[in-house]
Amino acid sequence: MVGIPSNKPPEKGESFPSIQLPIPKPPSEKAYLGLSGEGLFRIPQIKAKVLIVEIFSMYCPHCQKDAPGVNELYDRIEKNPDLKGKIKLIGIGVGNTPFEVEMFKKTYQIPFPLFPDRDYLLHKAFGEVRTPYFMVVKIKGEGTSEIVHTQLGGYPGAEAFLELVQKVSGLK
Image 1 (tube, rainbow, N blue to C red):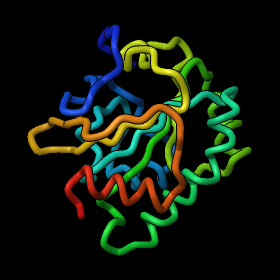
Image 2: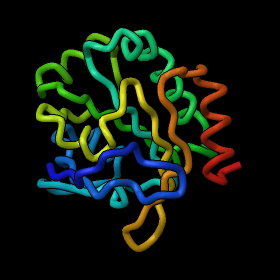
Image 3: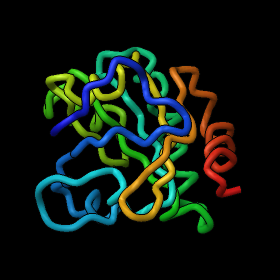
């Protein structure tokens, strides 16, 4: 995983940092993201119009508290035929090992892909934001993306956040 060094959090209107993540091994997660094969991928390769990225840590009490609400967000998207396939979610566990990320996933029954960032490389690319931190990324053609919303903590609940995501991304 490679991150581009940064000293500030990504801002609305900027491109999402040019990071690479490992293609998930579970076939269901690979299919969810619209990826195939093995190796690494970049965010614009995800088959979606909008990606919600949650920066979390398994040790963050706010992340733990918000997990059921973020799961509800995933469920609302997946059960809505107008949004399913258009909006996807991933999580990046800063400072977390693969084991810790898997433990968080099992403990809180997270249905979407989570990626470990054991060495804080991705965290540095995101300006070392605190957790939980949400980024809404509009995936554009030709391998580009644009951040349309960033938010530190204060998860407002699935309904309000989904409304916000649709508004800022132009899906509504």
